[in-house]
Structure formats: C-alpha cells, structure tokens
Image 1 (tube, helix red, strand yellow):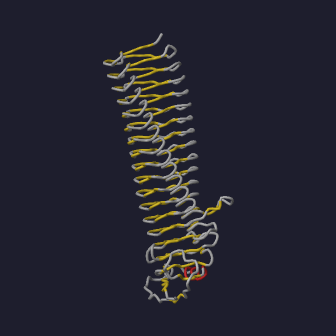
Image 2: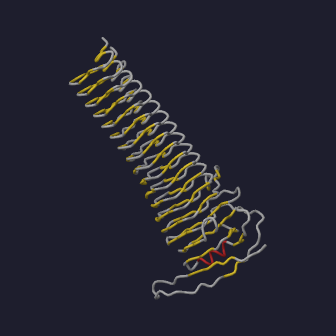
Image 3: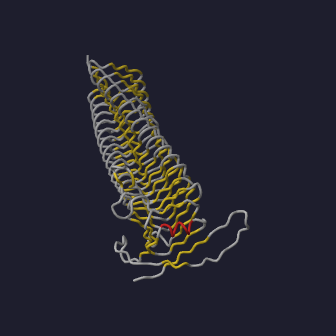
Length: 461
C-alpha cells in the first residue's frame, strides 16, 4: 500500500545576503513497497541517490520524515548539508549495494541527527564514510557494514578519513562485520555518550595520526577489542565503560600513545589493557578488574606510566611486563589477582614505586629472565606465596618497602639472581623474612627483619 512522506528542504543563502526566513514547501515523494524490507511493517521510500543529491546541492537542511529510504546507488554528498530525521528508530536510510550507503566528501560542514544508516545485504560496504570537513553526528545509528577480507574494504559503521574534525554524540554503532567506528589519518574527533556494541571486530578504532577525546561511551560485547589504538594515533580515552569484549578491553599497537583515564575496564576476554611495540600512553585512575588474562600487559618496547589504578581480580597477573618494556608503575592498588600482583620477565625493566600489592594468588612481585627493576616504597602484604620472588639472572634494587604477612617468604632469591635490599621492613611472613640460594647475590643493609615465623634471614652457603 502506498503512502506519502514529506521531505522538507530549507536552503540558506550566502553570507553576503541578509539573513531571512523561507517558508518550507513540502515535496511529494513517490513510495512503493519493497520486496526486501530490512525493518518489517514499515513503508519504504524508493529514493534515488540523485534525488537526495539534488536536494542537498544548495546546502541547507533536509528533513526526512518517518520511513525507510532505500537508495538505488551510494549517496555521495559534496556540499555542506544538514540531514535531520524523525529519530533513529523512525527514519532509516538503507542500501544493499556495494560501497558506502552515504559518503560525505567535502571540506564543508556535515550534520546528521535522528537517522539510522543501515547497510543491508551481503555486498561489501560501510554505513557512513566521512572524507574531510567539519561534522556533527548525533542521535543516529550505524549498522550492517560488510567487510570484504580479500579486498580489505567495508565492514564499518562509521569510517572517518582525512583531516576531519567534529563531534559524535549519543549514537549507536552496532552489528557491523568489522568495527563500529574507525577514526583515521589526521582526523580529530570528540566522541561522547555513544554505544559501541556487538561489532564483529572492535567497537572503536583510532589509526594513522588520529586524535581527539572519547568519553562516557559504553563499549561492550564486541567480538575482538573494545578500543583499538594503532600506528601513531594519540587519543584521550576517559570515563568509558569497556566491558565483556572478546579480546582486550583496550589494545594499543605501533607507536600509539594518548591518555587512558578513569575508565571502567572489566570482564574482557583477554587483557584489560594490552600494549605492544612502542606504545607509551599514560594510564591513570582506571578500574581494571575481572579480565580473563592480565589487568595491564606491557610487551615489545612499550613504555609510559600506570598511576593510581585499581587492578584487581584479573585471571592471571595484575600487571605483566615482558619483552623490553620499561614502564613506570606507581600508586596502584593491585590485589586479588589469580597469579602475581606484578610479573616482570624476559628483558623488561621499569620502576615499581609506592604501590599497594596485596592478597594476590601467587607472589606479590615476581621477577624472571634478565629483568632489571627498581622496587621502592611499596606495601607488599598477604600474598599467597612470596612477597617478592626473583629468579634466573634477574636484578632488583629493593628499597624502603613494607613486606608484611605474606604466606611464604618475604623475599625469595633463587639461583644466580641479584638483589640490593636496603631499608625495608620485612615482618611477620609465614616462613622466612629473606631466603636465598647459594648462587644468589643478596646485599642486605639497614633492613628491619623481624617476627618471621621460620626465621628472619637464611642465606644458603
């Protein structure tokens, strides 16, 4: 059954003319039923891309009423334009053709509000692609992107390229076969109060030299990572809820950096935060808990800092530092993790300063390989094995710590390890305060080692 939708076009003349108001004249758009309606029980407007482009060519505002607008070709917009729908659940622009459903390619301004853009069918494509300009996208939905792995194209709800700037607020990015949104090249976007859910790869991706701020977003149930930051991207990620993603909560690759602050990163399928290669972010004031693997994992040559985070109940270590990573770890609460509070191994370095490391399932701090580290002014208590355990030919400078009431030893030094142990309080551990193998080199100076159950110091000869 046919019905009529009204499309109102409001054009704005150039700045050389005085501002004035124009009456909007409704135009009749012919409607026809669609044999393949992506949303059942809705009238479908079979609208040519040319129709919309003709209406957008002068700029201004296009109002789309309730209904499904099925395009017969990709819609490419090259002029400044504002498109306003009746709401993301009421106004739907869709196409099953290969390519982008909608593309904005201009240095001008683009605004979208209250519209769903859905790529339907099996052909590759993105829902919306932006190539430059200044954009505002609000209260809209982007879904159905189809990825072609052989061509490595498509699959994204929103793809932003070039030097695009702008704001993305109160949108939903869902059910895309690759990413919910991908921000690349030199783009700088503020991304606030959105939902990125049920995408087959990552919820939100930054790459190239992209930057901007992502805050107060919900990023959950994506098959791979919640947020992926690659190349030299440099975003600020703050106050997001990143939960129940299949891979890492936040994954950083390449030489990316940025700041990760005040996020809730919980119950992800791998690490809460994973850093590879040469990443160097600042990780501050986050709650990182109940992730399947590590709370934070540093690999490759990653650096940066982790300060004042709550890291608890993760499935392996609270913090794992491997490769040649060299982070600064300070003032964190690291507790109730299944294995160690902090594990350093391979050729890692780094400083552990003023952390509280309590009640972890194995050692508070475990050091292996050829690690060189500085451990100062930490509170290391009630861990289920040793407070500090050092193995192989690793070296640690252990100064000014409180190592108290651990379930085995305060400090355990295995074969060929090296320790300088200065001005620590080592008290009330269930076995020895300090114990070392004969081939270990342990230098003890000005420590308080008292009230340990089996004895205070045992240096094997």
